[in-house]
Length: 367
Image (cartoon, rainbow, N blue to C red):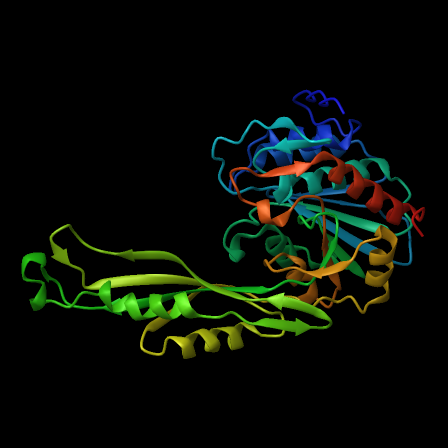
């Protein structure tokens, strides 16, 4: 398959979905810098008569209003983690496959491209659809564009089912793990490093916590038929004053990915029990989401796209919908193991397959 031509500056949603993926990946949109891409999305949908288009900050919402019995939210985030020499994108051939390399190709602009093309082209889907493309997913939960719109326009979230375009290799991943970030603080007493015995080294006091983490065995928890693998890891360490001073303060930041059977409060108490000697501060927390695959509409979707249901280990915004009582799944092109990696890349055939599967479900041709 020859490499598709790059669309012009305006976003051309009549192009093939691989070209659309490349076009939006080549528009940098690191969290907090989504404005240009949001402008392009809004402009590309402005004259779609079958859609009512709203904007809140850098979040775009487009809705059909066809009077269908059921409504589905289909959402994807516009932002990426920071670029590291991987924009603009490039095509490479890997055996008999064509692969698109670059930031956002997996997480999750290929999924957004599928959604944008279908939003523009499907004027009469068999369910009413609320399409959402939002900002600030890759940063702290309180900045998330979906959360902001939910606070200001909760009516836009009325739905029977939700699909997040997170990378799943074209499979359906139900629910998601929760995520918790905490700081463990150790305190000591400053002294000159030449006379270290006079002071108390706060960094050294974190050594038992690091040893405990190194030997910690995370659980795998079965929830509603799916096995969720947990994880507890150190992600930051901060301490030190100068090269000749014993530090009197040090902080170790942990990230706990916990099964959706636990609440944030239960997850916090689990971590607190592991490190009882440290001052613990929660800095960020988001509930997980149970799979919701017992819902008839979710079962219908899984069957229609011909996918196997798997657990989602990372946190995604399905949790926001689950908290509203809306069953939600993750479905999109891309290998989640490549998300955020410098060699982030997506199989172009996978993008096309996800487009065909979602189109088939929304038009009834896959049933």
